[in-house]
Length: 292
Image (cartoon, rainbow, N blue to C red; front, side, top):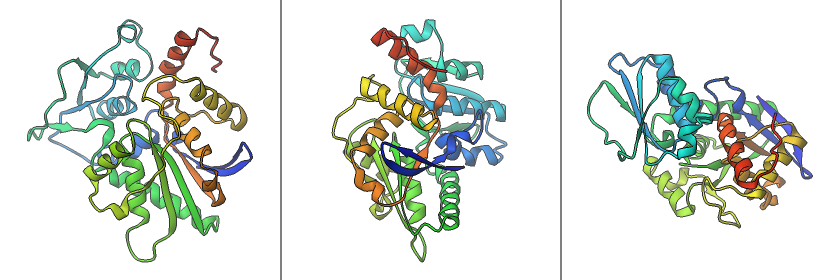
């Protein structure tokens, strides 16, 4: 679904991938589509790693439950508050049967065919399958709307989604007039470029990176991040992820020239994580966080 919206005198479109499914939505549904739709008779377990509130962690727990696989997930640290008060992605991943390993380092991939090893955040080559489908949907919509030129924007963690979208729009004869823009949320531009190169060495396929005016440390709470999230929800009636999207929107609004061309913002889901993020904001600022 694509919706036309307005915010702060800007008109644009939003690709609502958050509405794909209740349990398997957003960019993680795209990244793990290959594993969801194919059979792996030898696989009995998924192993992955990352943070204790990762969207990928939760999505992999859903995938494992659907496939009746075991799921082992490794984290360097588990906050004492979260351990005592499970919530968000962590809570629901545990309910899906995830086995959590704390402080044991990043697991090493093996040649064991019974184990499926997934890189942090779903950064892997098979993610291209589901993201090519997303690209095809965008192209079909663009043609239907008779839009000649289109800017696409999304915030990035590993940058896998932005990379494979950009690649899909730049392969083949008759290149469509689409440009993918992204901004780093986890590290800086050099970090994001390194993530791209792990998956695709040909830089002509890489999306354009926009540098934010302000450095925001990943996972840290900022009042301006919460404020923009609240304004977006109130004025557009759309709830966004509280970890990546505020950073994305603040950076996008700093670059108004992007709106001079029709712009499509990719909503990548991750809303389950808002449960824990809102609790953190409430604890830090001791205020009554409005949330329904």
